Image 1 (cartoon, rainbow, N blue to C red):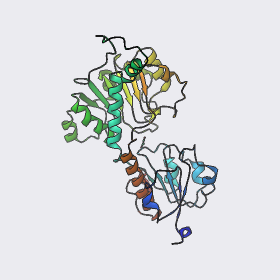
Image 2: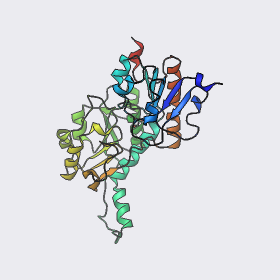
Image 3: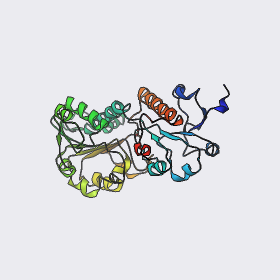
Image 4: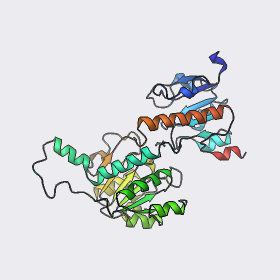
Length: 329
Ligand code: GLV
């Protein structure tokens, strides 16, 4: 088949072999390097012709980029979050935006538990101390941490990932509180979970874990005042988006022991500069945005993004659309 007769699609970043198989015979692909900030100049040159854009969360899909792509029919973001995409601008242009909910729920919930447990039991600190010769004896008071059983876990945002965390936390014997009123009653019953206002959740939880999308309303949701309202022995876990937490306030909270510790998979900015004060704090565990980082999950995300892209190219409704309002126009 003459490839040039197929719709042109920009894939912002290279992916492993096989992940884009669904697109191979259906599009003419121009693919960026594995790691680049934004689109390379070569990829930008294809913007006027492209009909599809396959983006990662590191690509800012803003009005400026969109205005250079007048033939675009679909933006397909390989992520559940889509705060890197100017949704209003896409909707105004009649452009559906795809995202990938569902397939990363387990991976992200697992990682949330992993860093929660690591911070609660001071795993990185203890491991470094062992390696660096600070393990002198079995000390009754060495590296003491927090128990999970009977701890109160506050889940801010009880969507798919928040519910996945609740399911796991139940197995650890935690008491679950959440803020979201959309959770179905049977699920709340299954998790023995109680819905409370955010302020109550923050005041009463031993561990607070964040699972809301980044929007104008959730930007700096966890600010100085709210950090000060938390228990002084509390742990804050963030696997959603860095900007949900006011970073400067978090540094103060950890330095001044308003809270005991934090475990972060996401930061503001990303990557966090290595000289950032948060890296200097032994009560702050930071991993580099790896919530969905398993082979299986990432491949499924890529496939879901391909499915959205193909639907968009055919002007069919996207199976996972971030701006369904685009179809009301
Ligand atoms: C990851 O952070 C995602 O939104 O998929």
